[in-house]
Image (cartoon, rainbow, N blue to C red; front, top):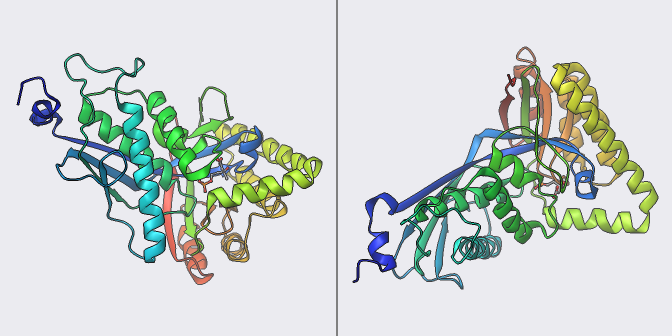
Length: 345
Ligand code: PMV
């Protein structure tokens, strides 16, 4: 093997295995309306993570681009769903490979380290982010995979590069994503997001304590977003008015999060939930959880993400945490996790 062949470089111990990780996320306000240009707020959830490794692995040809993708987290899926998800992961890996493969003049290869992704790669995904539950699993896997492959290749990508590439992988999951998921996950910071505009990091005046409760059913974001689009197309003025009201909530929430007025933020969550019910993306299970959380002392509660299943969030204080968690479990939540959005300086 000649010294400058790709395989000689793969065997360089420094670049032998690439690792990348990314957190889950919650949308605080503005989902769905964000697709139509309204602002939305989102924050990372570090208690759940996608971890990905990338390494050379001869005989790994499985995807069309010669990649093998192993996901350790598909228990609980029936064989047909497992295959659907596996095929999507191959497509994501192929897209990542195509985006990272030279000649790509914009990529910051370190001198002497830029190598083409070999044809036989093993990409291993280990993720604790529940799939299709509105917690950003697809975006996190995309971001973690891009980081793992970039590290493997000796590429130093900025968060902006990673986010832009993950947006391309998001299209494979969602068709027409707003870009909020890849942004919050790649930057790993709370964001105020408007489609097509420069990212604005959210200023947080006081810690926000949230419980994130899983309603127990999955929702396909692509189908839910396309259902909203169909309903909007039949009644544009009604839907645009609802999206506008949701946008107002996000703008108010940005100010309230900055001032640290958590009580007012709770009211905005409740108002946002009512509007999400009107656009037809809530469900009886999600509403049961929201009602139970409020009755147990939550300051506000709403679904988070695409809806029609998946997760809801309840804004709590350390004092109400135990009661709200118990109420959520009693009302049918299959899992409850806590996340804190820390005060920014
Ligand atoms: O991926 P999810 O389920 O968190 O939903 C993303 C949020 C939507 O606003 C519904 C879609 C989008 O692309 O912003």
